Length: 594
Image (tube, rainbow, N blue to C red; front, side):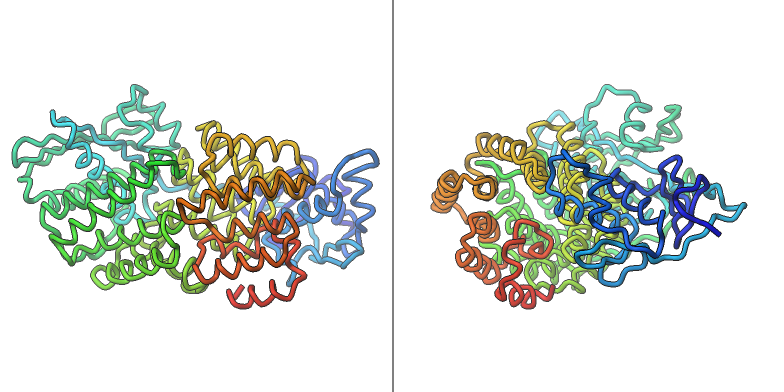
């Protein structure tokens, strides 16, 4: 039977069904996004399954004479995107076999979908989605804002754990976008893709706390229930847990079967808990500043650590404060506010102490996963820690996006993209989640996808510099040198204090022939190092662009000694391509276990 893509009816291979007429690829009930060039490559191979489609044939069809493009790079990138969509592996292919210097061959058996499966089966109903909107501070003292914001965040975290697998809880950043909103419930629900909204208010009078919560069905704005709780301030931690448990129980009646509560560690005193909430408030303030390091922003880290330290001085066995201490030190390492190895070693100690005190705390497993990825290069251990964090709280977008970056560094392309999309689904309006998803796309070679995600993130905030910076890097990989240089020049002008932007600009200038300009930017980077820590990994990128191989490897050696958090991405980072034929690169990759 002739079953090739030249015919009109759909084709089946593996778990996939391809409909050429509608240009749609599906697996089960899910549609698989496939860009134009990878789709055409797939169709060409399916026209002659089992036979070689040469690189020259692909060039003539996809990039005819007169098309200005780096053919070799573009073809390799398109095949990578096709493999990522199919979940295929170049070393152990199930679908697309590479014949070096010749072309590609489709090796999976083809068939037609059976009559009763020609239409995809109906999708399994997704779990209901809940957004916890910022609780209103009804106390006249604005200094109590930290308590109200902290209560909201703890509600999100506890509901995510207690209702795991039954209710999808939108993450904090996206929900916080609607603080004091005048939008209707239906409009908020539509923006967040949330079925239900939880609103509330907090009033403190002397030593009394009154919390009111109400559940709203977003589509028709029906108020399903409202409850109030009043307790002494000294019982604020027990009130917090009770409110979360009561709301979860009420939600389970309205929405889904109840889930067992996770085991809790030792309770904290009211004063320790308030200091803990102050720490989280300052930690969140940094992310509210869009998560990019600017002069003065690092104060948020110091204030957060101060709050957690005071909480632990009052209650040394308070596990959440240990876990958040670990996360802040991971952040200090990631943003190069401290020598990374020193910060990550402190984070490891705090994360392990938190796990000793409370093994079921998702934040602790998340921090431990970061430490294993950035400090210990323990890829299997990091994956297990991230997986445990997700199992404890599937609504925690941080665990999904960090796990996605790990998978991208390990070249597990399809899994990485899928995990990044889950993070975006949990926190659709978060700038950090958006640019992390773009980074994953970039690291797996999906440069068009990275550009698309950067632009979507910049639609939310056109001045978000990490997205602008990554957009330029992706443009450079696609040969759009003018766009890349203009983008990096703009970022450098907006943030001349940012050594990463300057190092990336040095690399871009070097590979486009402006060696003088590249050396000037690299000198600027080193000048910035007089006042702050410099990432040797990003300095190595600049040297790789300049062709200064010895200097690049010297910087990478320093990166291993100092545990530069970016080092995990060395295999996936395309700007290190000029170094890969050097034996020193092989030794470095072996050292990292990659």
